[in-house]
Image 1 (spheres, helix red, strand yellow):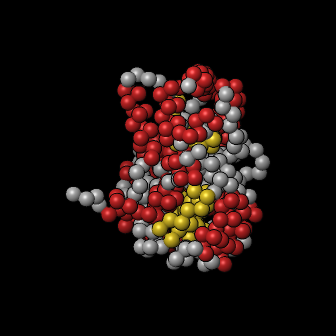
Image 2 (cartoon, one colour; image 1 turned 30 degrees about the vertical axis):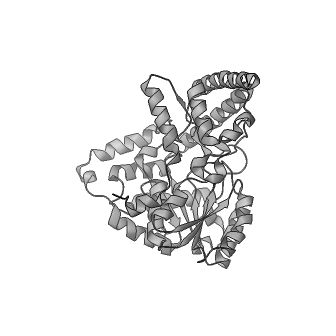
Image 3 (cartoon, helix red, strand yellow; image 1 turned 120 degrees about the horizontal axis):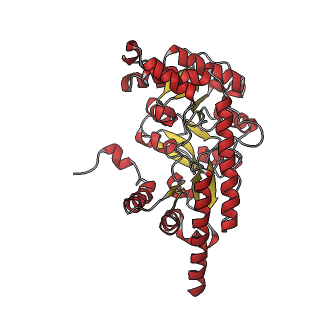
Length: 398
């Protein structure tokens, strides 16, 4: 019996090969230091948990919720965008709460994509940026994007050689997985390009609050008139370590937001009401917890870069996101990212995400997530040093 249509359209899940090896090693008792998944390990701030528990005790809270988000949450999201980006949005027509940014992107793809529609997506990039549209029947036009400038320079060629013309372009900054950051001039150029070619801009800003040096990352909606062509997807998963709560939001163009809201109304009732109330408390409450989160990731980044360099693997310094986008060590470049990731796990008990899982242009890299504490990072560095020395000895013998 053949696979179902949508299953056949999906490529093999690259991360699964590494995940199976991780499961086998852990079953044998091996202590894997896991930098693979960007799964926040910090605690949810207490005032958010308290609001969740308080609301859950109210009987009315256990009823069906609102698919597009309760009014208080959408108002809180509008307030956050006005404070953070200076952007005023109508919470009734320009904001929809989603079950995380991933679901928001996937449902947006379902809402706007007709079979055969072309979407321009950066490569490497987070898988849902491409696969959400593939599952909806669309076609992906990948543009190599190791930097915002490279992505912009490749857009013109992608549009000229696409039949039919693309309906939308995806952006993601701070970028997952490359940790690149875009400035406001990038978004001005992207919006102008979209207007010229009658496309939408679909911006993913899941890591908007994890930045370390320089100005805070801007939003595409800060560009004058951007809401005419752009929607941005954001999330509370990283900012408040609320990944399991599944609270995100889409903002911007009223036509796209209306389409997303209508599709969502057929698919889900929205997040559990106490979770939505807690999310509003997160956005409206004290924000010192966000700075504490930021400092934790900054310190982990610095410890990882320093200790891994001493072990023999020098890595680029990201200015934002919770990832280090690491070129494969020179002596392992011929292996590709999947095989290197497997050898690193077997030889050093370190798990990373192979860059090939983010697209073909990521195969010379691995992604290291800053989700282990400093003690574990230093332990990983000690394991790494032994692994590199062992392989250097083997290479010399060969």
